Image 1: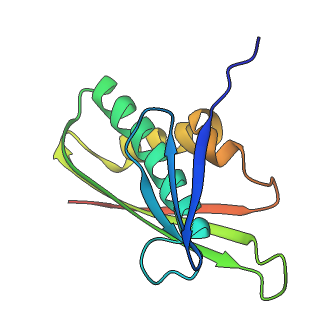
Image 2: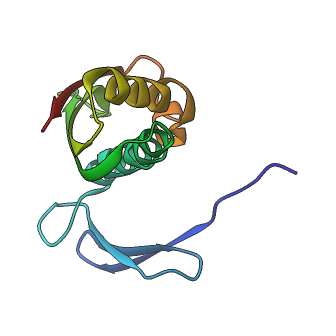
Length: 135
C-alpha cells in the first residue's frame, strides 16, 4: 500500500484556519495574509523547507561543517484565476567550513531534481531556479 499523509484543517473565523499533521501542534493559516502566512505562501515555505532538509543532509555527507543555511523563495503568480505560481526562485545562503560553490550547487541540484517531494509535486511547467551565496 502506498504511503499517505493526513492533515486536519479547521475554520476559525474570517479566512483564518488552523491546520496540523496528525498529533502535531497546529499552525495558523490566513487566506487574507493578515494574521498568519497564507496557503500559497505556505507552499513556498514547504518547498524551501523540503529543499533545505535535503541540502543539510547532502552537505553533511560531503563533510561540510554547516553553520548556517537560509533560503529565501520568490514565487511569481499569474494575474488571472487560478493565480497559481508560474515561477519559483530560491536564493540559498550557506555558511560553513568546507562549503564551496560546487558542493552547494550539487546539493541543491540533487534536491530540486531528485529528492524534494514538495517541488516534485508541483506542476511541471513551473520554472524553478536558484542562486547561491556562500559566506
